[in-house]
Image (cartoon, rainbow over all chains, first blue to last red; front, top):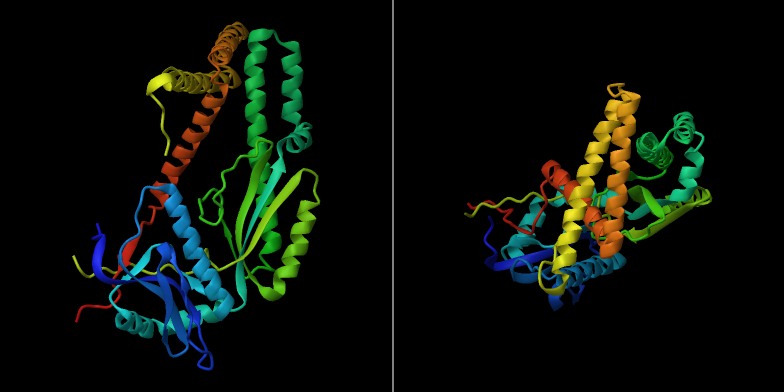
Length: 272
Length: 109
């Protein structure tokens, strides 16, 4: 268990590229109203604020507010310096600016190549939702379902109850299979266009905090895409085609900083 | 966080919701087993009819209780939450959640 407070620390937002010709002045307001600034070494900078404790609370509203503030800083840094490498909320480096600078110096090559790779690339989130009734309509011709329907019609009450349950189970299996197939097909189409792609499945993420409340629509696919600015139109077109299917709704958000595609930094506590 | 209210006026509803949810899950598990046996031919037609009729009666009884108590919605919600909890538990075994950590990247010389 890590000690929750420390004398000096820096809360990290993101690493950015800052060419030498560019001024390094960057300031904004960060998590919990802290003053955010840029620590720079040669052509790489890191956006930070000074802190003494981890951000920890059980109040969901406060966490939500902090997360938004965290994202706002990264968005501002992205506007100013181009695609940033974002850090996860509450990533803190113990030590002062000098230690951060020394660390950045040591990791410069790694960050430089990651920044290079992600230049002009942004993350997009795609969620495909499909209307349950439309899906069921397309599955009604399934041989086994037709057969079960006939048996239900011919059976007496008790038997038909079990057969109805069997019908429901078969329908669920088919729907599940269809979702998996459609997701795989979409991924296959997107892969050549996207720089990188991650199937989020049911992972919880902070980019979409609203709960899944739509009863009639079922989530079929949830993806994070890393897209180069030049390819964005191709992605838009492809998704327009998918959305043209009857009963399909697509949630398409972005551009975001590449949260999903940023490398995780290793915790390396050397103090007890 | 999932909470079942056992205080004050909602205590009865909360408890009924919990009990009915558990009974529903139990019945479904038993139904699945019955269907499995029916499919594998372990049950005679008479047995299928009898077991099916019992499940149908249980089903009707549960539906009536839910209506009477006005807990259809809360049972549905609890079941969704339980689904979420189970899915989360499975995922957290696969991938432990990351909490805020401090990083000490510079070696102590």
